[in-house]
Image (tube, rainbow, N blue to C red):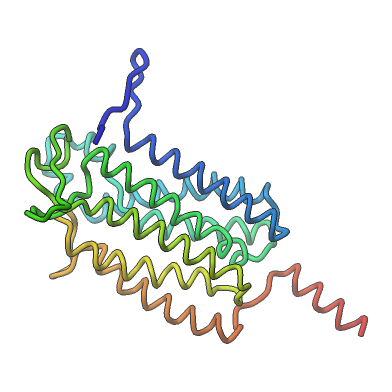
Length: 266
């Protein structure tokens, strides 16, 4: 675990930030490669990645402020907390909304591009969770199990205490989700199937991993904020999967025009 990787003069490279950057790069390369094979625009994928990263970070920060507003107002290190705090679900929601808005602006099928990009999102999340492990945030409950880890240099995790490595469990889960979705995409399912699969798999996985986590988080009753959101995410995934399998999602404007033209030719 390395909270700080190295320094170049006054610039310090942190493990978390490095892994986030690596995750974004891996997501971009993977999505671009798959877009080229699928005959989709790699330029649009590049622009979509940049915009969704920006929108995702903003959404993750906003949701963090909403869920931790009370503690943020009470703490003496308000600026530090605002700098470090993010809630992944806020990033997912904002990232998807950003993709929909951009694709509508470009008059292409938002769902087609989201289906292609969503496995790459899971890859980025998987690498990002390694960054969580390196910094010690998002840590798990104390344990005596063989897989427990001890943090000795972290500003977030309790030091010299054996903890469940929930960050690594999340990373493995995210990468597994990415692999499942990429394999499923090869069968060319209906639009929305891959995206709904992500909502289902990530929602269930996140709900379960929250049980093992022990870091300070917001809550809604007996549930953590992320567990509460997971319920709606899974419900949305179920509905979307049903509609996708029925082929009820609309085509893009360009596709509709092509279909109309084909009908006239016939």
